[in-house]
Length: 411
Image (cartoon, rainbow, N blue to C red; front, side, top):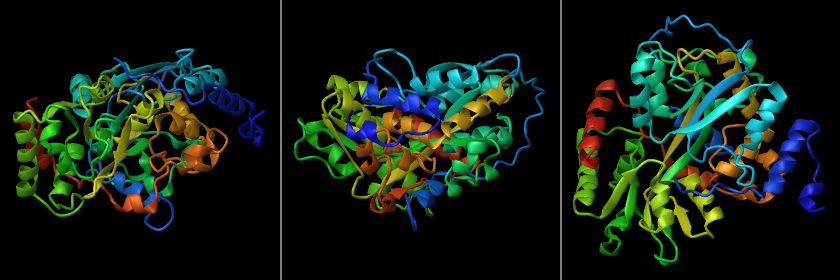
């Protein structure tokens, strides 16, 4: 038995079995084809929640019958590569364990490739108070703000989520959802730059380095406005969490459009940008932090991620129950399950993003001790000092800037 297996295991046999399965998997990732103390992790993750003004609209008046007692099922829509997965069994081990513990079957889908694109698909149904066929959806702070403000979510019953106490304290009262009545953080992360180490052995240090002539047509950037424009504004010396306006935004947008028009940028994508990296069509770009760790695991450590010298963006994704979901109690039980530190560590070990669950780092020792020092999962104070949250936008700004961004990327 290895030293890792000799470590003291949790008493709960279900959790112990899950960790054992994780060890047998050796943290296998799916192949991609289709801070602490002072202003440390907790304080900076709190800033991730400052994506908009506090939800002002009343809760939706849609009358919904919760069928959780009679229908032991729920549907969960998430982003790609955002939950632990066993390549051999083609199953999600933590979801299997949840079903074993609760009897609730989970229909899990990777339906979300971008906030705007997903919102566009479900907005009409949500506005009409209709069931969108999902009991949990996961969206980024700024879109979470919008969905809550528009009354498109159901208020959570914290009595069904006793592990809510494990949410980092500074994330429990974000400005777009005071008291976390309508949302819970799933994961957090950075947007920064990455490159193929064999193709660019000297590496990159700034967003401006992406515009080198030899990289023409080999660059991808994210279709999330706050990440791509945020990095461009940081490159321009703008404090994206502070006071700025049309002039600063327009300068960054003009830079983006120019690099698209001249062919420097190959494509603007959501999660599917990973395909271009793996195929070799793209050798550098603006990316999300956890993705690179996952891709490197399956592809012989080909890429390197860094926080640009000018800084990176910091964000969170959040779980919500849509307004007409008929399985809210079941959804709350799933949220509670994933806020167990042992389970949170299991997810973090696979997705490699920042876990919002207190105790996950300590629990990681039982799963993969080497990840306890991974700065993309458990950031250092120095890295967090260089991470910035895109400031809140008014509804008018969101419409105006969003339109400018979509025009720049040709959407």
